[in-house]
Amino acid sequence: MLDLLNLPGIKPVNIYKESKGLIIVAVVDVAEAFICPDCKIPMHKHGTRKNKFSDTPLYMEPVRLEVERPRFRCESCGKMALPKLSFLDDKRRATKRLVDVIRQQCLNTTFRALAEQTGVAVNTVKNIAHDLIQELKQTVRYETPVIMGIDEVNLAGGYRCIITNLTTNNVFGMLEKRTQDHLKTFFNDLPDRGKVEWVCTDLCWPFKRSIAEFLPNAKLVINKPHVVKMALEGLEEEWRKYQVQLSKEDRINLKKSIQWLTLKRYENLTLSELKELAIIREQIPELAIAYDFKESFFAIYDEPEKLQAQNAFKAWKNRLPHDGLESFKRMVKIIHNHYHEIFAYWDAPFTNTNTFTEGLNSLPKISNRLGRGYSYEIIRAKTLYSVEARKVGSGFRSGREKVEYGPHIPMLMKQVESND
Ligand SMILES: [Zn+2]
Image (cartoon, rainbow, N blue to C red; front, top):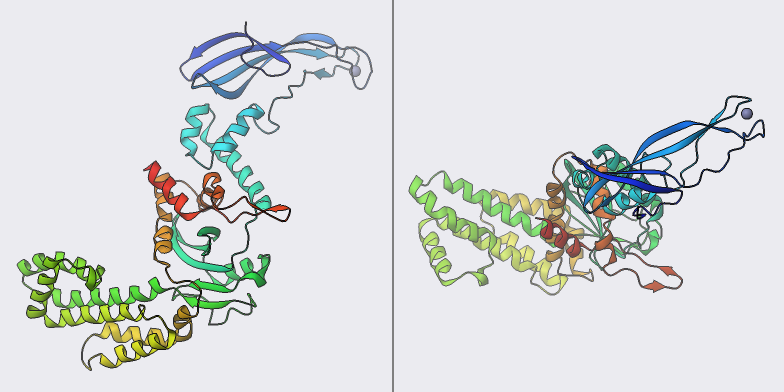
């Protein structure tokens, strides 16, 4: 029989198909005479032993090896011995090459799919993945970002802290939670802490102001999307207030209008949308005023200089009416609480962070696609160690070492889309 196994020490003698895949029966090639390690005398053949092992799929079918080995016995002390099979994994009843295949694929596909392809138990795939993740944690190192994003994303059953490189658009790290404790540990373990010049985050940043304690050269900036989001929410709140006053018919008619009203900038409205806005302005002037305040708040970010932006905010705040628009007034308070970090945006060497935020928002899709039953640890590894996404932008050599930035966010998005 042709040696389709190509495994050292054994040769196939039979192959047949069972419902779960192929069974390949193999025998040991050469049986050398065993010497008893204690008595130093040759051992004698003492029957055979059959064992089953999983191997790499053949013809798209899972493969089980059935290996028959001669057993040897020392007639003096009774010790038993079996020929060693060097191609077996140390920990599992599987060949090393099958474990390698599972390691290569376990972070790119589902455990269930891989278990079906290879015929091993889902738990075995999971264990192999866990071993791999421990190794990756020890060995994979990404370049510390100069401009670091720290955000919260709802992933794998909770809000996780995602740390990104805003210069290269890569994921740098992931923490189970964005608490002070988690971040302190992260900063303490961070190599080249002095490299970080900017930390870009949102309004729920868990530390009071200063970041200098952890990152000596970094300035904190609150990201634009998190600030303008408050204006959108403010407008929505005003809308809900007027909604209750409307007849059911009007409510249905206006519901569509409100969607573009809240989301679209004035200059992007179509002619018919402008007409609708004019109708709203006539029928519910308060709502149109709220829209105008949302718009003029967004316009603050169109200002090219910090001082102009600060003046625009001051003017915006002073235009707010004495009565009503409570949601916008609450916003003013929040902005004053984070004034320095919000206006640091104009000092920062980056402006367009919108596409980046969209990328981050697509991360939860990764865990949704995988379905339930994946722990945070696995989702983290699948995101952070994705082999394909890590290739982008990485790999050039600086000095002697290969520089890696982490998985590229647009590439992660592409992977999610292609799997949908
Ligand atoms: Zn012996």
